[in-house]
Length: 120
Image: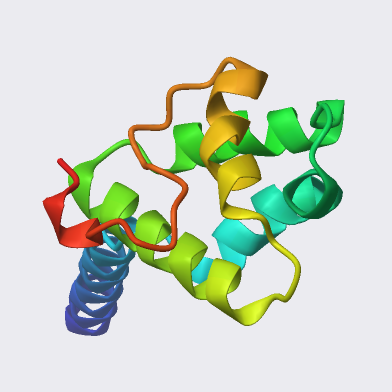
């Protein structure tokens, strides 16, 4: 009987620890790899303009859903700035116009010059 109680306590401690770890990870800000995945279909538009594709606008909507809070928006902003500065050929005006053309209000400006810390 004592062995069963000991095993039950051990399992209970492991479950509680796992729940704490999961809750901690869910509170982290969005990762750049996620932002890049959502907006990869937008690269042709960002370089050439015109009209963004349906997958591009879908990715923008997915990004909005994945970055609802201030830390997520600030992290997404920094990721967008990093990508805009790292990938040649992205036209800043196209980036600024993308949310409006897709009808998505991200709350994150698409610009190389934005101060990401000022985003609420």
